[in-house]
Length: 302
Image (cartoon, rainbow, N blue to C red; front, side, top):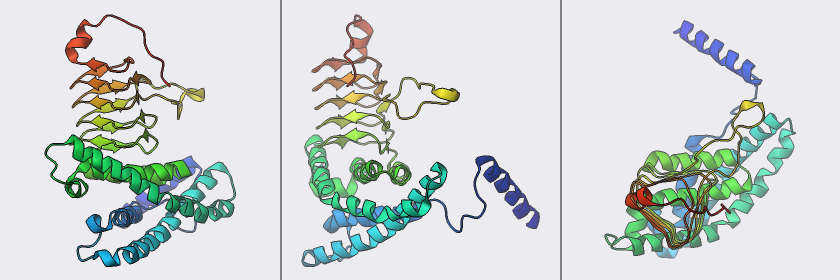
């Protein structure tokens, strides 16, 4: 066993030397998945206390419970934010203490967004109830639907992403991905009343833009058609490369939409369609229509 431990130490040392990492950081360098899982669990309970909170919670104690739970969640989040900001500062050659001092303000800004997050989530839950004839109540949606579970995590992760802690945001989104099979990058921009039905296998890329009242079914991919190469031969980061879905679009199971194309408002994209060009508002695209379509003008991406 001693030889194994020594061997692992040698491999770690070589990797850290190759990456220019210090061997003496004084403690944990990265945010913790376990801590963030606890943070998001508490945030979900604070957002929906009577449905995702403790089984014995009574409505007259709701505000006290929400305050206590938010206090615990935000204190734990603060430490994770400090870790990420310190990590960012080390890799940018900046002062870690100054970066860490920004953590409290960032967490306060995140906390201030929670009422708006809950309001948007209410539109998502209502969209799921309206869009699924099998749904018997909005409570069933929150308690049972993996699509809503993934969207709750996405809404939290997107706020963190916008506030400048993308690693925390990505960890939160991957927690939902692991639990639901739905992969929503926290950088995607998604409007109100968003519904993912069934959900398993859905992939939404970093630069995707989704309007209001959009519905996706299982195994839908909103992906990139190609990856641009930047200076030095590596992949260029952050370029718009995923689709734009305008308001009231429906995308059925198994459809794949690739590239920075625009799916016009009110369009429906049929099951198993492979689409790499823009379509105007009100389009109804099926496999048969694609096979017989004549080349036309492509709408520019916004």
